[in-house]
Image (cartoon, rainbow, N blue to C red; front, side):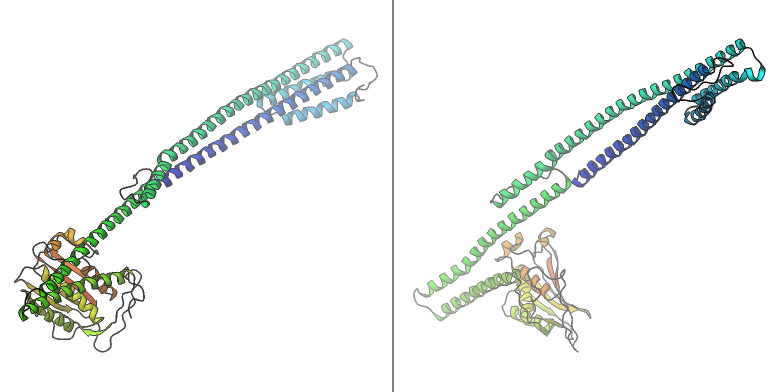
Length: 497
């Protein structure tokens, strides 16, 4: 799992827990609010019923004796007609506060009984009832009204108790859910900390120790490629870098050993030649052979030192070119004539078109490249084989090809062909060198805006092709400045002069 996926999962889990907690909080708040409202309504219903009950009892006491003078309520100074008005008002208010169907039915029954009581109190005036009948009717209707009020009060009490029990239940559920969510949150944080320590922080520590050890000289140290995807990629990149640096160090050591060995050979030959001239009689023939040997060794040393200087200039971005318009046929012809005069034992052929093939290039650097390609073709080809140098191309490009019938190279060897200080196994055995010629040649051609391609098969020879931009004879244009992607490494933006 990657760190991005892990943290996305953690954040998603926390968001989910937050949403669940918020939803539960809303549900609990709504339920408790509804229960509080039910309690308030029940209390209000009980208050109204009790108030109505008190008013009924006061009214019954004030009108207890038929024909007696109308007395007033001793507590509030109300007369029976005023109490009757309050009773009617209270009945209307009770209808408005009734919250359940059962309560509304009970309020309607209370209203019927209260109105029956009030009617019974007025019955003597309308029907001429006797005192005994009046008392009996009044007591009966009052008793029914009070009983209905008691049932209404009981309904409200029952509702209040039910709301209280429901509130206690939801309160307990809230405690349980809060505890569960808290435990889940703590467990999630614990798992996050454990995962980070086990699968993230430990690989980071291992990577840091590997980097620090590698920086102190522990070239064998590598970081374990474990943990999240990002850390595995970092460890893999570091290991690749460490392998590359180790390989470069090994190549540099091998290069130093190769340079020391290759310098020792011509120096030993020079030392031997100079020592021979001081022994006995020196004949002209002997002196001629000695001078010829010295010239060859000096030329070899000069070529090696030149390659080293060119490689250093290229890596420092200080390769200077002096481009001018030249005929590629003439450059190729001068190189071929140079090696034809050396009697190398090979058949060296030049194939050029009849018309001029112009390029804008530094002639000395281009000859240096062709010299290197032809020299390699001769060195790595058997005696008597044919080496062909050809010039061709189309209206926009010039192609200079050097084909031999030499030892050839495998696809694996071709991959490192232009790497500095690296030489194929067969090349090491066939000819001395430090492995800089082809690398320098490629960088020179790239500085001209061209490229080098190679085709080769083991035992069937190789073909090197140099591609350059062609210019017309009417007016050679200035070559475009190479882009950032095309500029060769080690050559600065102002390398052409």
